Length: 277
Image (tube, rainbow, N blue to C red):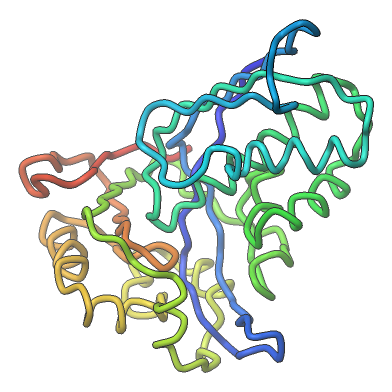
């Protein structure tokens, strides 16, 4: 079986409080975008010599770290723990979503693996049960079980549906080759609750978002990495109606009424434009 894990963007991202456990409470709107990885899973032959129950191969955009710690493998392990009789599998993950970009590519891969295995082996988990399992993999993993626009609270795991459609808009995604430490990004943010919640702002026309929809990480990240801030400025110069860093970066997105050429404007950077539906 094959599936295509989607990326997401954050529309507004406010760090509203520091929790006793050291994490932070957030308010954000997740929106799925048609920038996808590809994940193919096949049953492993009983005689295949493998030390792992989930044999994974990763191609496409390079992914740092041990493949055995990839969320695709961890998702398999979580279901195997609950369903010990689940067969061994081969998994091939082709990465097209930029990594360390704030677009949730790894989380989407893990959630897609849960959904695919549940269907492939008729495990019988409901959507809400899969969301609960996904939460053990990462804070934003539950969103990708259904990949529908949602307002998120807590550390990103508490979801409420949002009536929002950006159908017809063109989304630019630009990722400078600059790593941003999520831990450091959080450390430099002073939590505060915005005057208007992002859930309410996204109900306004997109033309009103620029001054009202805020990503709290931008101030500190742009101060440390001015090149990322310059990407946002350049997207506005090219005609974006709204632009912002997504997640804790380093990808910056822009909403355009009409597509435009990005490659010449952002040499040496990952950049693409997709039409939203």
